[in-house]
Image (cartoon, rainbow over all chains, first blue to last red):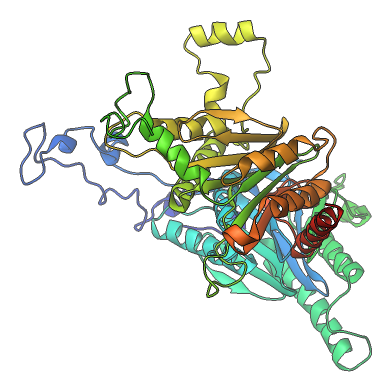
Length: 306
Length: 274
């Protein structure tokens, strides 16, 4: 199971296709050969042993699960700033290397109330993401309706993150992962939260986060900017240790530009979500100025002169 | 009571000779004697309120809330047996959620057919379900009605106000233990509902906003309540309106306090005039 973004949408080599731990390996779900027909054996009345009566048999003796994503979104970024958290994601959903859907919002506001607001930024398989969004909305409405009474606590970003990571881990344990890498950002009672979850159920939190290609290219830039600002705050050079709104937007814009230059599954059209105590604000789509003159000298790009 | 001793009031599956179901009528009695609940449909939303008699000084102030949410945009409050109300709310939540799962949209309280009645009836003749059968209020009312059809069950001992704001605007309904329901601009259930309804009738119901509604409902609740007879009470109030962005939420405690103080002042002034 190679889930590196570089492998998304690529055809698998026979070597890669062989996966001893895959649920499609023939050792699992052997169709039952004994006790066929309505007159079964043992304690059960045997009706469900009838040929074609269970999912494994109906699937031709094997159960297939998602082995690779189909329509995918690339990296997402997250950054804690003075008033809360910012998330960034571009508007592209690729079909393999084809830029297939170019107006997809990958930032979803989840909840916002007087006390708390949260937002999710999603990369990876878009249909898994849509399923996940539905699951989360169901859970959040259910919790909200019950929280109107005084015998039920209200949700915050930390609780949603816990639910999400449990869900992702449970799915990977069923060998049927939701093929996503996500950042959850939120603010509750003045506390900022930023966390990462992926298809393996891996979780970590940090004041700067990025998924996929972003974790290689944007994370160092985010971290550098964050730590520089922190040091300036500590030395008293500037007030506060966290970036202002404008500074945070500038850093994210810079990172999105670097990713657009380097990541072939990205697009120069993206949105930034700002999560503060006031709620979740998702910007209109925007793009960066880019410079491609240098590329003319590159082999394989401009007109070739051997 | 003419029904007692006749043998026709033992089961909800037996009519009396003059065509009544006494168990359903008794259930309505259970609802009538509990604390007052008020619902108000405004031009821009809805307001729900309930008068909670303080049963014991040991109870925590503001605890034991009575108004419930069925979905983001629907609230309900019932008067009568508390546990019956909670059970009905649970069922309502399940209905609203199952609608969301199936259709990917919030449930309407009562669908207004957007096609002419003749088209709707011809579709229904072809086996389509009635547009109302997919509406929350219908589903909840039919659930209550099922409990009036079998000898093995007890009808719900509650009158319920169900209100919300859906794509057709603010909506307010009252469901009775029999499973019948009616839409209102404003209504009250429970003890003192007649007096409360008389007061509600005096309001300018087609132009009132939720903010004015909160003040009026608080005033009516204080007016109807008789301290000497029923002891102290707490007022719990929720609303849906522009202030809550379409969500069913508690009225902010500061606004509720203002409304209650204004209500008490108005009552004192009225007393002095008499």
